[in-house]
Amino acid sequence: MGSAAVEINNLTFTYPGIDGHPPPGSRPLIEGFSLSLGASQRCLLVGSNGAGKTTILKIIGGKHMVEPDMVRVLGRSAFHDTSLTTSGDLSYLGGEWRRDVAFAGFEVSIQMDVSAEKMIFGVSGTDSQRRDELVKVLDVDLSWRMHKVSDGQRRRVQICMGLLRPFKVLLLDEITVDLDVLARAELLKFLKKECEERGATIIYATHIFDGLEDWPSHI
Image 1: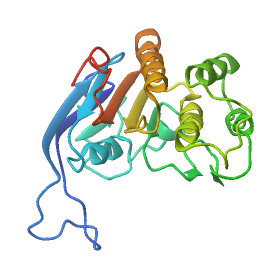
Image 2: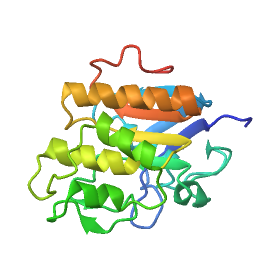
Image 3: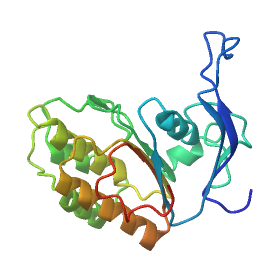
Image 4: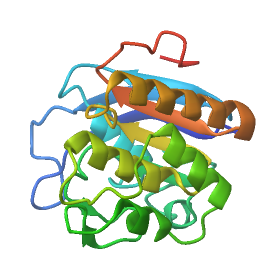
């Protein structure tokens, strides 16, 4: 499939039933979907709620099993090759991490009485310059107590933690919903720079289009 960072070839997917197989007569949620993205490219995945955006990202991220040749990330199958995610080369930030942080190696509640500084500085193997830049980009106050902050502030800390390790492919699922306009703009600028300067590939699923006109290379 060449040297594409993300290659999807005629993907068809139906959620399995209890026995692990799609129920008889069920219609595929995704049918005949193809996509090819190279290094430095930014793809906006658009569609109404329930259109399958999250499912596509989860499949790319290795959270649902499909045939290995249907979806390849950096030439490998994310479901069958877990080193893609454990190495940090493939990173997934989704909308379902309001209360718990497991994606960054933590198994703690994001709402416990702990400082933002302890959460962010607790992520191992990170570059201090990159960390400082993300704290500035997301306007995180390191003295915030996580059990007292707003949803938007909590989201900033979570995004900061999720981006600390440099990725090659990043999957974003509606992660800016709790951010104000300025924070969202700064984050998108940072992500664009990641693609242009480091050759990263990003797929961003959203239904909020404001300010995104010049951001993607693909829609």
